[in-house]
Length: 131
Image (spheres, rainbow, N blue to C red):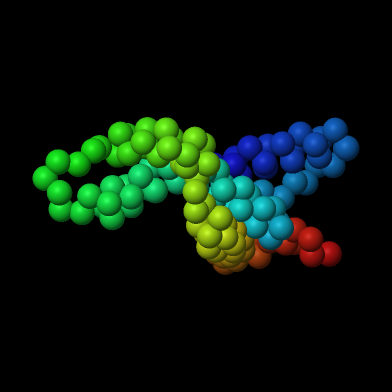
């Protein structure tokens, strides 16, 4: 998880600036941004495979002999280069990125509330950005 990289980096930065208390949660903006980046990376890595699968199903349907998904990826690349692999990714990114970012942000806020309810008033800390 990217969160496991961000929180320790925040602790190191706090130590260099002489701060002791570091919050273990992501702010809403951090969670939103990390959710966006994670979805973009995931979509960029999996899109050629998903596109090849859809093209295979729509082009060959119920044919007895059809190419494999890796063969479809090679065919797409040979006909259109890298653009051929990522043709149509715009709507997929638009659809997925904001929903993933919002889900990550809401998940992080729910986690903070649940932790506060479980830990009780003894461990309550101010939410990031609230002062």
